[in-house]
Amino acid sequence: MNMKRNRRTNRETPIVVITGAGAGVGRATVRQFAKNGARLGLIGRDQARLEHAANEVRDLGSEAVIALADVADADQVEAAAVRIEAALGPIDIWINNAMATIYSPFHDIAAKDYKRATEVTYLGAVYGTMAALKRMRANDNGVIIQVGSALAYRSIPLQAPYCGAKFAIRGFTDALRSELLHDRSKIRITMVHMPALNTPQFDWGKNQMPTRPQPVPPIFEPEMAAKAIFWASHHKRREVYVGWSTWKVIWANKLIPGFIDRYLARTGYEGQQSGEPADPSNPNNLWQPVEGDFAAHGRFDKCAKPGTAQLWLTLYREPVTLALLAAGLWACWRLRSNSIRLKNTER
Image 1: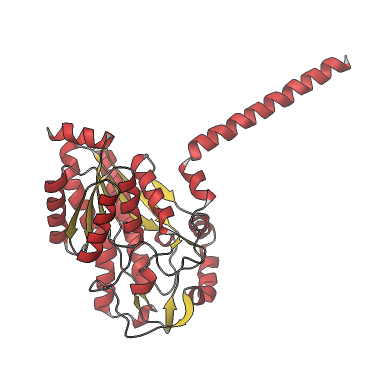
Image 2: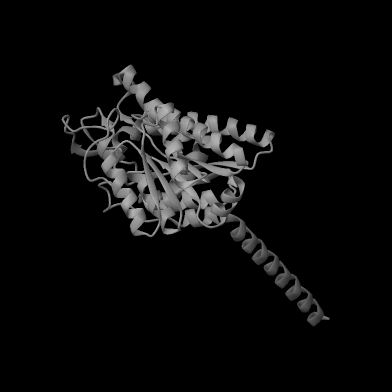
């Protein structure tokens, strides 16, 4: 019966779990899946934001179940998975999106804060993957999406905990992917690497700098990230790079890492500072959720771009490549035909 149900949901109404679903990329991804008919399990720490997200899902004609959990606690993640599966049925897609960061030079970060940011961002993805695999292995079916970053390949100053955690997720994911291949499992795992995004991360991340933080331009709206995550959940792709900036950063670091080290030493501090004085009394979400009417977008709507042609080319690279190959073959055939015709005319 479970296997039947799982096959049906994959075709018609997949059951999708999203961590960090209350705001930012998670909130935009909730909307993207709801618009496409998915039934959603929403995991996060803030009850009010999860309720708002669930109401948006219902307004779009779909179904949502919320589960309060701190992803840094494996037992809470497991309990959330139990609650969602009991309410909705077998989980088809699990998206590990929750994160935490600290804006500060490494030497100013307290050990307990560094540990906390690592547990939320890295171990949160590990615990989410554990909960997902525990259920997906029973039917040998499902998709796990790790929300990555260009910073999973190229670290930047002032965000050592976050960068280290994203590198760790990539290493963990590669190891697990090989294990799944060894077992000939039909469970698929994918990383989607993001550029700078206009999310509340820059309003509630713990900031130990004198000015308010900002994403390093170019900045994109979180809906672009949501579209990439949705696409990746339905197509077999090992990794997806979102945005030219992500592609350039990753490849530049592969080719000229030493130059990038020195470039970021000169520009990495200023590029992440908005110039607006920081308010030390502002709350941050490292240990507790921040109250407020936060949703998908941050405060950078005026300068954020809705999308990029690179994403379209990345998602549809196979048909684009085939089209270019066909065009090239056609051009060669035309040149050869013209050359033969010209030779015949000269005779």
